[in-house]
Amino acid sequence: GQFSVDLAQAMQRLGHQVTLLAGSERRSDGAAATLQEVEPALAGVPTFRLLRSSRHLTALDRFTATFVDPSTETLFRRLLARLNPDVLHLQHTLNLSSRLVSLGAAGGAAVVATAHDFWPICQRIDLRRPNGRICSGPRGGLSCATCLPPPQGSDGGRAGGVWGVARRALEVGSRLTPYMLRTQLLRGAFALAHRVTCPSRSTADLLMGGGLDGERMMVVDYGVPPLPGAVVDQPRPHTPFRFGFLGTLGSHKGLWVPLRAAELLGDGPWRLEIHGGPVRDPKLREQLDRASAGGRVEFFGPYHRKNLFRILSGLDAVIIPSLWPETGPLVCMEAAAAGLPVIGSSIGAIADRIDHGRDGLLVPPGDTAAMAGA
Image 1: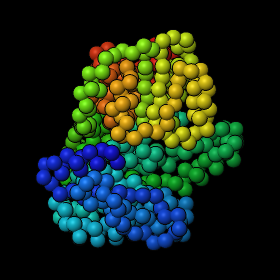
Image 2 (image 1 turned 90 degrees about the vertical axis):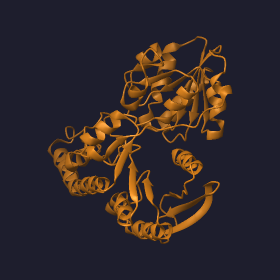
Image 3 (image 1 turned 180 degrees about the horizontal axis):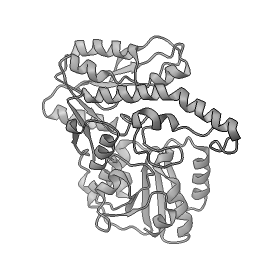
Image 4 (image 1 turned 60 degrees about the vertical axis):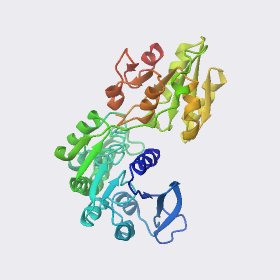
């Protein structure tokens, strides 16, 4: 969301007319889908929000609606007719519809689709299987159909015996057709875009390995607004030395890695600041509470973009312990803009961005001892 606003502002400065469309969760009241003009996210930039219907949704409906939604398409078609854009830039189609690409092209717009993550080839978005391993791609939908937790009590088909294996086979079989459909629709939709952009070479390689057309793919790096000189010129290091984690707190972000690494560090002239949220995982909440009780780890909760400068100016290094192949990430660029080194996982775009030993240190994903050493 913030990237879209920053990009809209940059386009506006170049003299272009920009309109923003934001999707939303389904309406809790079950009413019909609507398109509403809301308070502009940026002065002079008309902003619309799509509210989707939640009427009579079965489990299969909820799945298919993440990538195909006729009511969304109808409203989007009306908005296109009203705006008649020269360029349609799709930041994401999750919970909207993959057909927005073809609708834009049919309306005469040049369509650019940006892959901020692996949604075009992965229903889980982060390309991680339930056991944490990185998936090599959908294989026509077969990998997706098997990307399920084992049946309860079956221990992956072993503890449940023959019945566990049979139940697992039925689960996979029932999901194979929907996931094959999803794979073909998403791949076909992105093939209709005039250009598909992504922010790093490693991301492009994984997307092409998952079936996206390499001829339409372009690596276009993110940009971040320049930071005030006071942030960059801030004297460092501090005493005690201050490490910082910034971002969302989903399991794929690997916050547990620096928390456990902090336990290994023990006493010393250091502090760990955690800025982000929300905390939805009870186990992570317990880890945060335990770490904060020691006095050297402090959890500040979610932060607003306007506070980013103040946060960065108070740090000596940024930690990015992600467990998935990050496609950006913006916090890595924000740290670089502030002149801060990064301790990051040697995976995805983090490894692309960090020159180990020069502007940061890379450690294997999930390796708490290596993180503590770094």
